[in-house]
Image 1 (spheres, rainbow, N blue to C red):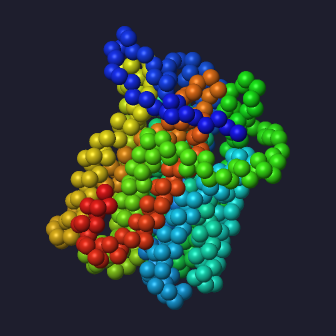
Image 2: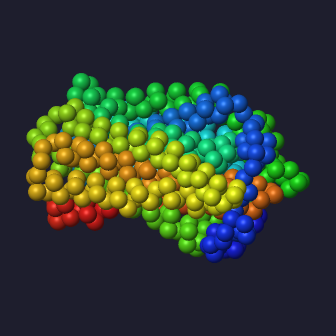
Length: 467
């Protein structure tokens, strides 16, 4: 049984001190050249290998999230072929998103049993098979079942990816790595409708899923070649996190296997206020993200008379570009903020320092863009340029806020330091898994409720509430 961290090991707010008398709080880390250069975890791989791993885990989040929105321009065609309604398809989309949020409850324990690398590759294989099933589905029931089953692998790629990055990138550059990683995770929902619109205009909607099969298959090949196995060593005095290529785990008994599927380990961590509030903030941000993406066919198409899937799909380039811009710039700002506070405290780093990098986007950029987007559409003020520009800055503000929160919840445990990296590192996968459960529950609620909400209270008030 892993030792549960007491609340004392979570962040405490030290009283301000001058640099000469500053005392390290329990969660601080003294940063020096030995930590960032000599650490086995951070220097075990060459920069080329690290960047290759970064590309692979980012690519898989892109492939996994691609189908969550790529079907939006194709909803009328899918409803016609399966003799169902667009509302039913939106509800099925919400079911897929719920499955994505719940994937950590399944694949997290599996990774603890068969190893993270084996579980990662198995999840990719399952997603590939389910994508084939969705592409060839003869009826709506089979189609929905295949999508939901594939969705159960979704956030595991994000959790495993963030965990891998936390193991191989040092804290002062980790925000940049997570920024590129998030570019993959947010590009999927953003470029999915664009590609889906092009496909539906010139081919059958099923081609969307065959494209995903190719993307996932490509990711599986790269993963088998380059993703290492990262496992915890035994209690023998060695580093708790040790990157190795050979898996020599001992066999687990049946009670030990069943214990790994106990979800209380994830939900118990929500008792810590800093974790709970970080997760809820991510949930509210996800609600806005999927409100923006899901509502386009209902508000943008009628407002500007966009009649074809190709043209309406191109609108998604605006928030998609904002997502990409916010992810990369937000990552660099996150790292710069950490470095600034390290200098300010004479080499002391606190995990919460990183959160300061997202305050501007969270409290100014995002709400301003959201209000402009919603109320100009409500009042029909300005041309198509206004929602395009506001959607871009809304996406940038969203990802600028997300980056610090995502990096904050990803950490790395070390036997010699209780709080070596970000928040509660010894339970890192559980913390990230809990975040994605809450985040995708909010996203699912947004997907299912946003169109009826707009019909009831209007675009302006809906987006005011969504933020």
